[in-house]
Image 1 (cartoon, one colour):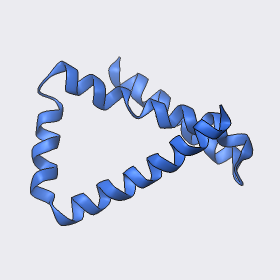
Image 2 (cartoon, one colour; image 1 turned 120 degrees about the horizontal axis):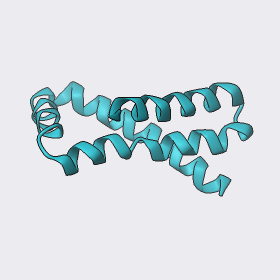
Image 3 (cartoon, one colour; image 1 turned 90 degrees about the horizontal axis):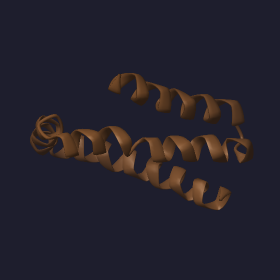
Length: 87
């Protein structure tokens, strides 16, 4: 389970770097996608639910990281932010 959590956290980091590069190189495409994100319920819920997977990975893998408290708090912060966003 911890190996899966580790790779989820790594893939999430790669995803964030990729999104940053996309925002830098193609800001028009990024704005189009963000406009679509709130239009349908399916896209809206998937945008909100998908980040809970790496947040859970951060919590699970936190005890094996160099900064366990930071990973754990950041994971719980991400989950609580998404839950509060939907209320």
